[in-house]
Amino acid sequence: MTINQKYLYFSLHQLLENKVHIGHKNTYWKRQTAAYLFGVRKSICLFKLKPIFLYAKRAVSFLEHTVFNYGKLFFIGGSPEINYFIKQLAEGQALPYTIKLWLGGTFTNWFIIKGFLDSLNKHSFIEKRLQFKTKRQRKTKLKQYAKFQDRLIGFKALPAIPEVIITLNAKYAKNAVKECLSLSLPVIMIADSNIVPLNIPYFIPGNDDSFESLNFFCNLFKFAMKEGKAQRKLHFLKPCIFREHKPKQVKLKKRIKKAHATAMKMFIKKIKK
Image (cartoon, rainbow, N blue to C red; front, side, top):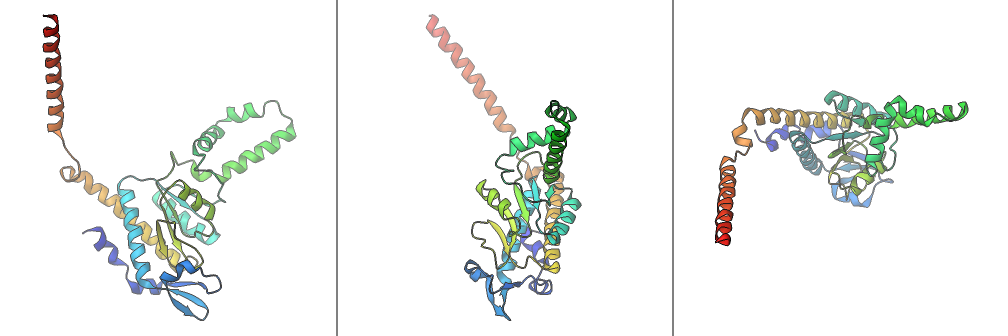
């Protein structure tokens, strides 16, 4: 089965059941989301089901391709409701995530922050820093280091800047999304009627507040990651289909080298004569 056939397992009826089409009040809506809105009922914006279905299928297929190509994923939380789902999703797939408040410039100054995090784990680094300081200064410095470690605890598992970032609510992770877009990193997120999703490449218009819709999207992302890993196994079982074997090119390179060497020898002999 192809990717497009697999992702038809969630229907338009399931989107209705999980309250994905319900948006915010019409007082908070943005004009840029008018293309995805069906109308207003009792001062609440309602999304069209077809764009939700198409955009979700597009984002999920991209997620599967990144997992298949060993892409690094990173999850960003925000409010306590979203943090619960992100924690479950990330820990279930053994992936790095952050729930704490976003520290500005984590990805733009990544090498400095990563080096500082690695050095914080070593006791010798902290001892050297606090060697010639008073007790009071030591206490304050240790508190600062503890806060810094607590805020960036999710980044310890990251070896480098991730290839794809996933958020369930862009309003709470606004600074993180801005930073990722400045570095041209692809972001997968749910965009409600109070968010402008123009610059975001892989957004899904829909409800980002209710328990049912968040649970539905989490299951969707989980399914995509599992499918990506399953396709990876097929890749190793059938290496002739996916891997490119080029033994002829190697032979050609050797022949060219030999021909070049003989031509050089002939040229040197002619010069000597």
